[in-house]
Length: 139
Image 1: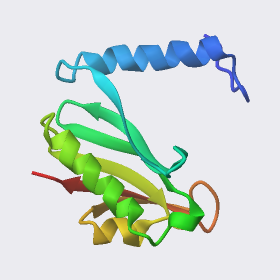
Image 2: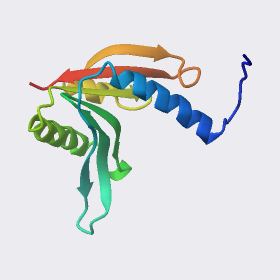
Image 3: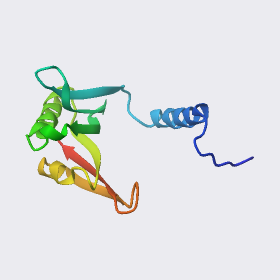
Image 4: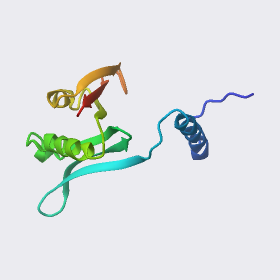
């Protein structure tokens, strides 16, 4: 057996490892599809000025990204997007939301919305920055 470290490995090697762990995980998770979700805010011209994206599986949603244009921040738009998400995913049986945020992003924002901090990486992805993990029950 040969062990190797590669910087920027070949895509087919990355895919092989990801497919292997996904197949293993499927044996231990409940049946169901992972569905992409999104909530978007558009200005009068139809331009996106904020939104969130993520994945819904079973009774959970993982919010991958939430972004609001700099000019719309502090307008309540982020709270409205999370509110819309909660309202809509409850209709699909979702009971829990999960997300993460960096220390320079929006930890206090999420805590004010009722999210609970459940973990943290310190010094990730670089020294002086922390990554916080949050969850919220929406039942």
